[in-house]
Image (cartoon, rainbow, N blue to C red; front, side):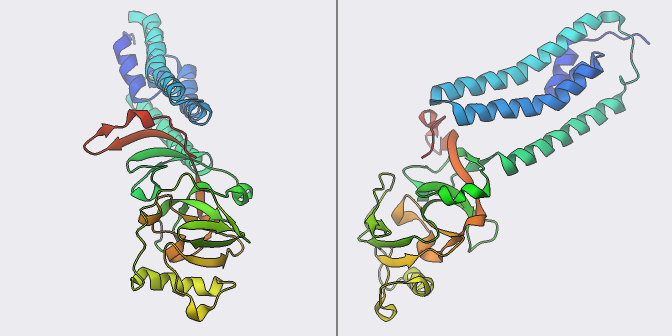
Length: 305
């Protein structure tokens, strides 16, 4: 049976699923190639832009190049196949609607598997929901978390990390790991000391508004901190958000605090966090939006430290 292959149809089908336009145009090998490789190549190139771009401008250029190659390059290539097939194309056994449907479902499953693997082992998108990370991270910042092997989790001193909170199942937060196993931590008048030495923290934001001594959170702090207290009288120990410790971080755990010290619910209140709950480390802001302001273009491509 003879049927004309339309270039516009090849383009639309390629936009629906990479490779589908090539299948329509009679090139099954190209269809399989684009269906299987477009996703991994696009993801790899985009992540390469995320983690290697030296500046926000370069990141945007690389990201736009990758997106253009996927959304324009593949359909154009399929259209060329359709044009060559022309009006005398003889339908093949795979030019059936149920084959097209099976191809779309197969590519969709493959892309879902690829997304799951990259999210689990390479990088994951995350949104900043609160002001606890200011000024480093703002509400409405969308950024990528770089995953890493468990063996390097002992090298995260003073790094921002994403981890599950020990209080609420499934909830993940962004905090700065200021203490790792064996470290002795204390805070005096808002200044953090680690192993007896004050820490310079240019990334912090403070309002100097401590909680009142009768606040329920202060009682919560005292309850969990006393078992880990060293060199202080437990009976006279009255911690505040700006004065607490010394505390020793236990094995396989870390102590995390938000950069916005007076608007962060963190380890000061609920205790140490298992290292195994760390999802990854924030790397780069790929989008930022503030209600009433719109897109914060200057933050796109900004590296997180």
